[in-house]
Length: 530
Image (cartoon, helix red, strand yellow):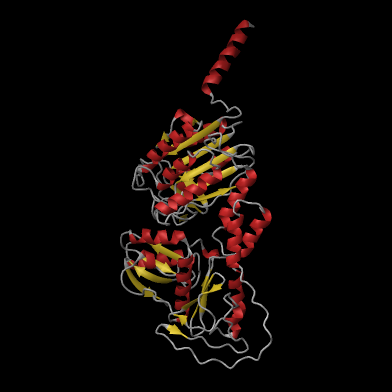
């Protein structure tokens, strides 16, 4: 019996030494990975440095690191092993952070982390060579009271190029955040992020700085990161984060100083998140909703000011007077066209909001569809041609700055009309007062010359602009296909130009089965519209 008790005690000691222990309540646990020394893909300089910077920051914030340090250049086996240990260690923890820097790709809407040993020659290799991000989310799921944070600085180009990877897309796909989870992306879903020219990527450098600010909530941190990265990259990279409802407050570094007010609680966090989501909108109903939910909110004066700007002041009632005779036509200026006076609808100089029934040139039979523009979310833009053709682009086509939305609307209109168009409305407001000449666009679609990634027409998504830069950097033979609604497809490194044309049209047709055409072959615009 004594021998049995000694054996049991020995096994308990061995188990305690061999198995990773679960975290106790109040613990903070982090898994930090930086992959850069790729054997079969483009090596990356910054991810190991990014992992070291993040590990140092989290260590100072009181996190226990899996492996006691940043894990650098992991194979698939080592990465999966680290994730399993991470899942065991965070049981009962108050906070868990997973940070990954390195290559990452999306296939059919699923995000994958790329181990340094990965060798992918076709789509069939993905499940055997890469690690599904869902594995990390599964390891973190199951505790609504724990703060889970996933950070993916992995939105670079597909490292395997076109090696039979037709289903691969640029950047990473947006994922649904499990309960109590925040997911931070280095840039918008579907877009590409920069590795950076310095020691660290722009995203990780800004994130480490934001995390160290005492008293910053998790919303403060990711919002500040977005602002800093956008400024540093000139707006070309816009970080993104998604979250599920969070119970309680969280700070990487606690507030310091007795004179400081108490940190904001969950209600304040919700207010900040709500405000950040609407502050650049042109929809007055959103600001009304903010004032109703947070009548004494921090941003009340700003909301009221935006509401006054966006809501037109009704004109005072005027006594009925006979309709005056039409005024003489305004003198025309080069590059402008005077709109016709619509029968039964004299232009009102006091009306500056989009009215489908008052759009000039458009035939009556086509006006029914214009109401779709009026109800579409902002940012959006509407363009019209003197032959009655029109086109519009809304935020449903992709997250774009208003200037690009306007250009896309003019490009679509020009393509459909066969002539230059005039910008008629941006969001719900007219560009010029009713009855005044419309100014034609001061540019035309480039139909010859060298391909310029910045002026490829019709594109309405941020990842599409990044893709044009990728196309420009690829070797011959290659071809680029477009559709006027914004779809595109390209093929590079083909044996012949004809093969590149065929493949580019095939890729474009996956999004728009009819209407794609060849815009460029190699680096020259050919404009082969059927």
